[in-house]
Amino acid sequence: MRKLLLIVWLFVFGHAASAQTDRGTITGTVSDATGAVIPGATIEAKNVATGAVYQAGSSETGNYTLAQLPAGTYELSVNLPGFRRFVRPGIVVEVARITRIDAQLQVGAATEAVTVEAESPLLKTESGELSHNIATDQLNNLPVVTLPGVGGLGKFTIHSRRRARCNQRYVAPAEPNQSSRC
Image (cartoon, rainbow, N blue to C red; front, top):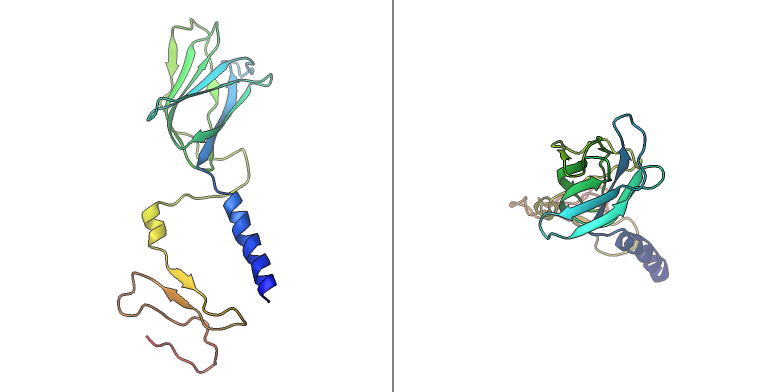
């Protein structure tokens, strides 16, 4: 029984630990005003808080990816000779999230810049995953589940800081006629 419990514990917590990261990704496509993809553009993401600059280039298909960016707010710029510089401030990179920013370059001098002031799209087209980030205070207010004993379907308690009158309640009593102590 202990070996089985150990295997289950290693599987559950080992898998959860490998999925933890403090990084996010910015990806997108660089195109011109007609929608044709532009290879060879220089993409830079500058972390507003730290000033760190991360660079990438657009591929032959016009795609770029800036992976493993520390979470924070970034300013994205795209440069290519013969086109105006594309600038997008206020991009929020969240933990374990992919943010898509497509850049449409306009013909002009590189000294000119096109600054886009818009929100990131809410639709995730990179994957079918569904996720949600919660703040630390929300996480701290969740009830804590404790399971006394290991064997069978026994009783377990749910502790919550929000319940001042009774800090435990029995959800699955061991005997059919056992009542809650609250």
